[in-house]
Length: 191
Image (cartoon, one colour):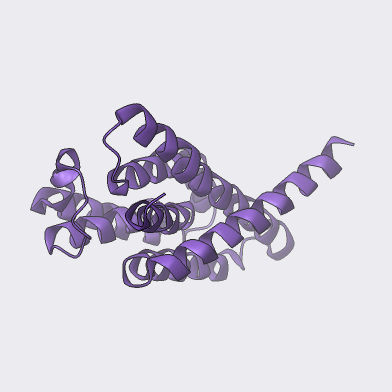
């Protein structure tokens, strides 16, 4: 495996894990990075649309609405039902966009497994965290949870471009820990 592929996978994991916290923030950061040429030069031409002004406006508007909606009790839980599959799709798209692999099947397969999987695990963890917060605080603590998720999504997305190796490794650790926690939780509830 060459250095470029490793960097791309770590960038994709960092962005995808950030999609698990907020779907559209990493898409907006990626659109801005593409538009301003911050991307390392391997972005495939088929994803050049992400740097268009229309994409920036769309992802920016969606990010603002998503962030605001998570501060509204009950709406935050309803939004999770939509955000979970969208996070997997966004994680898949972002990882596939950054992988410097010409084989479409391999690139999209890795995008689904690495990107979609990372986003799905983190999103599942945030859903359960919000449910527990709502249960124990009667939704009054959900705003604090939402703020933490916003910081994690914005910070993770930006850091994925600034320090892709560190961000990718931290994201992999988070996915590993969160995945283990989810597995243990489901095993206990199944018994």
